[in-house]
Length: 65
View 1 (cartoon, rainbow, N blue to C red):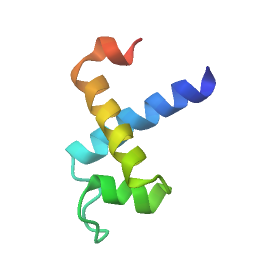
View 2: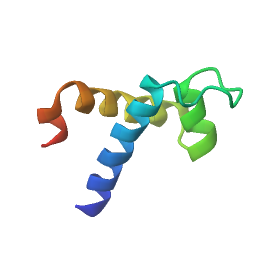
View 3: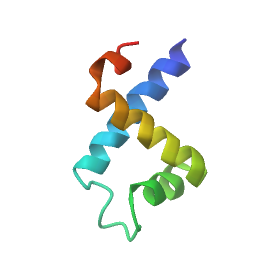
View 4: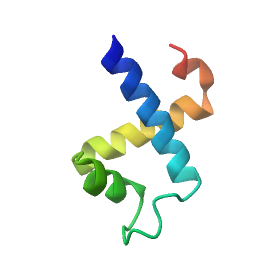
């Protein structure tokens, strides 16, 4: 259960990073590219992680589940 909790926290943090454009300045095209190159996720998994984080931030009841 711990890994799921940590992954959910990471997803929410990455969604905030994207919202604040915190990935800019590293020469990346977008946040998905930044996550992929910086954290080593595949582009597909980076996109899915960001989507989950954005959903959790927009709908807090999802994040609490």
